[in-house]
Image (cartoon, rainbow, N blue to C red):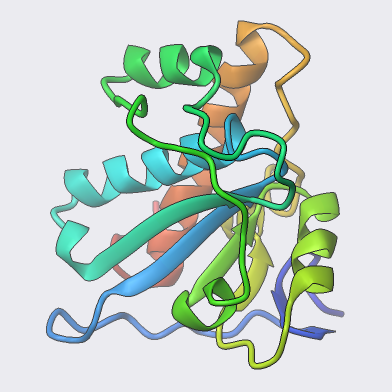
Length: 185
């Protein structure tokens, strides 16, 4: 039975062994996507970038984040996202919201959604050709978070933003382990 949340464009598929990107190859490009690109996806991009810095892998990746909807285009991340990230030593104040576009489907290797609704929107907005592997970001998490949706904290308090950061940190570790860039724990 296919693993929940792991997709290849147009069909659900079994997880496959990902190849470790060689140090000399072009950077692996990852796009993190949520509804407005001011809460979850900026935190996901920041958490993954932080892990890359920690493991000295930044030169092997290019990261970005985007929205499925145009609600906040050009806006900085939500102040609560910024506050939660800054508490971990991560400054995301320079990020600006943008909407996913047709070129993203061919320029990125992975497009990672924060929840099933945004995953469906990513698929519905896709225009052939699609190069990117499209997946739920938490499909790379270890149980019990594997395949769970990253909840939208926008209408809640600071605890929701902390929960989001913890979930995307775990998914970041899982993705790096699947890429065989850090050891399994």
